[in-house]
Amino acid sequence: MQISDTGLLLTYLSQKDNRAYGHLYSVYYTALKTVACYYVKDEEVAADLVQEVFVSLLEVSHRFETADEVKYFLYSALKNRCISYFRKQKVRNRYRQAVLHSGEQLEHFWEKVLEEDVYAHLMAAIDTLPPQCRLVMLLSLEGLKASEIASKLHISEETVKDHKKNGRRKLLRLLDNPFLCFLISSL
Image 1 (cartoon, rainbow, N blue to C red):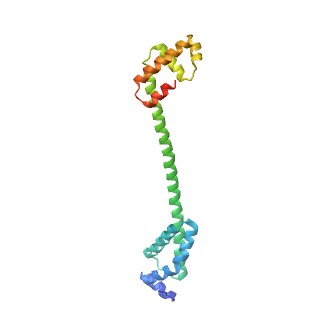
Image 2 (tube, one colour):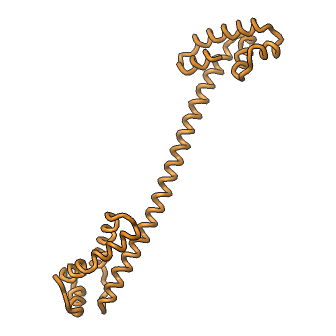
Image 3 (cartoon, rainbow, N blue to C red):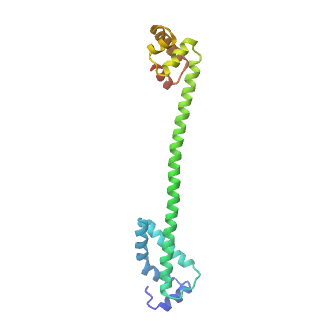
């Protein structure tokens, strides 16, 4: 329904008559949605924002004096809705980044826990080995070669190899963790 008389439109609007809202909706909806879409870059969001503007018009208690005042209200309300939308998006994005970052930190935390747990089990098992064998296994874990261990401990390379072989065998029996067993067999 088109209301051609501005005075009649303002009267209907002051009386909360649906004819005024229907007329304003048919006149301004497309323009408001186009403006909102330009800013928010999402047609569905733009449509929702325009709907909110018309709902706010229903709820306003102000008595409009001119048609331009109504038009100004609609566009101002839309501007405020767009600003509010961007603020909420900013908060959501900040929250999303925080969640992603905390997820990465949490993943790193659990990796570290697992690493420390594996290390603690391995060290506890190594501590049960005879002293010379324990020392050879610890130096092997540090990445030293048999010749370097032999030189450092003043023993033969053959003795180092025997300690490593016996140490691995004892550790494999002590540990039931496949990952630890794999780690020990690489020593």
